[in-house]
Amino acid sequence: MEPDLPELDNMVSGWMRRYGVASRCRPQAMSGMAPISPIDILTLCDKLRWPCDYDAAVTVLLAIDDTYRELHESKQQHQAA
Image (tube, rainbow, N blue to C red; front, side, top):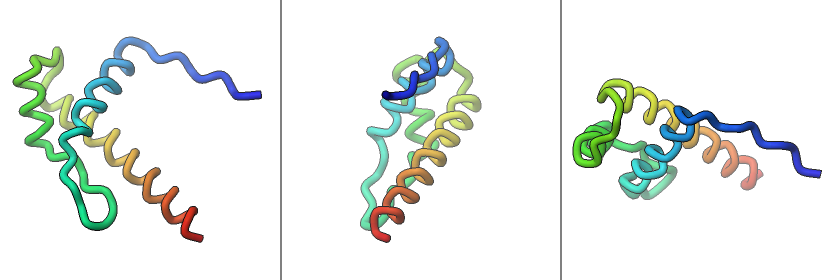
């Protein structure tokens, strides 16, 4: 039996959608996963007219990205072991 997933409110869902868009701007890296550039986040905020403060967008999306990259690296290390 699979556990029930928590419901996302509109705010969290909005940040996750924005992260999905921003993650496509991630630069390629030879090893590991490169972080998303704050400049790319600011550009997306401006061009796509996201309804959020620029500082909030950079802070939240970089925090999500840091967490995602940590989980990804942890999974890679676990698979290598």
